[in-house]
Length: 150
Image 1: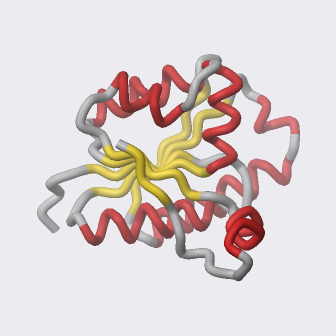
Image 2 (image 1 turned 90 degrees about the vertical axis):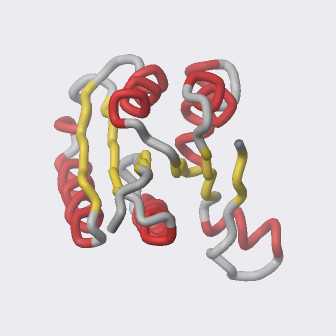
């Protein structure tokens, strides 16, 4: 593998995050890039629910199985920390879920893909919609659709 780029998958503690990791792994393979999986927890709230810690561990294990390097960071300013991580690691592609996009929109009062793109130039941002939302909007069960913003 040439490791010409770095793909970052930002996950939340949800089962749907497996889809994001899969998409990120496929993108990393296609671009012969490194795969990084990142979860940023606001404060230490993960320890309030034992199921959250178990699910996060499962997601990280899955990411490692697909060749990814996993990162867990605790920070109060999630969006800013993602941008810092992108800069520090030299990330070239970011994969976000629609849920993450919505949460960060509330924090930033603007679209996360626009924010990340404006803060980290020459970065490709992919937003992966939840399966249920895709099924409703397209009238079928395809879970293989995503759109790209630059």
